[in-house]
Image: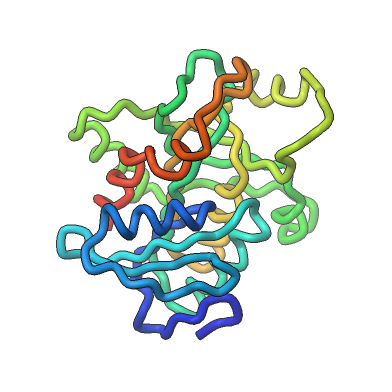
Length: 233
């Protein structure tokens, strides 16, 4: 049992899927896992462990943003000995050519957060995915004939900001595929603790065009990225 998770050590699998929305974690557990059992309800940040094709896996809500994710990732790694952390989340596309529902796998994650700079004394750290998981995820997607995009993403601390048409321009000019809120610190923490991490994202809105999915679609209708993540266990 840790400060924010009421599970016993044996309740959590070595591979944990991380969902910002705890209700997405609940949906995955109830609809995509066998014999899933809830191990955490603290702060309603739901966590479950079940089986996918006979392989044990956990799925844990983390909340929104890098500070919140850091709490759960830290406890999963240090208290529960998680070895693979795979984010299944949503993102906002930074190109008009990327459509709602497209899957993006984060090869690297840029950020406007100061969390890495505090760790590295003001210097920049390249937060990148585990190559083994990245390569395997691409192979799984190709085998399943699921179209994906692989590249850099932007992990921002700011969801609502003053209207500034230039805010996103520098990122899209440098071929950053999307904006989201967690991947950069996840990759940094994985490097620090020598565990494997990957972020698989589904486009829920397009920042450039203004198109957006509904909250229900964000919660439930992103099966393809989750199936890719589950294959990685």
